[in-house]
Length: 106
Image (spheres, rainbow, N blue to C red):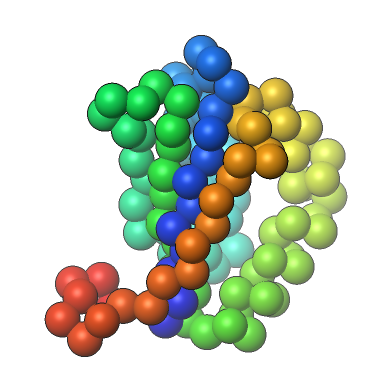
């Protein structure tokens, strides 16, 4: 399994709108394609930080899903333009993680 810890910096005042967008559009869209979303979080003391974790069975699956998601007309025409109004794309941080043997999420 490969996990992605994804940290997004939101434009000021966009957190509530962003969370609603993630939960109503982005997460359902990605889950329908086969992505496992392990969790979605807001920072308790930082109003501009949003974090989520995704899981893929393998690197091959991750690459296939990236192509299917990010090159689709839905992403290009419907999702990306809205995202760009709420997140600071240059500050996205993605950390790839591998679970240790005793990790609850496998």
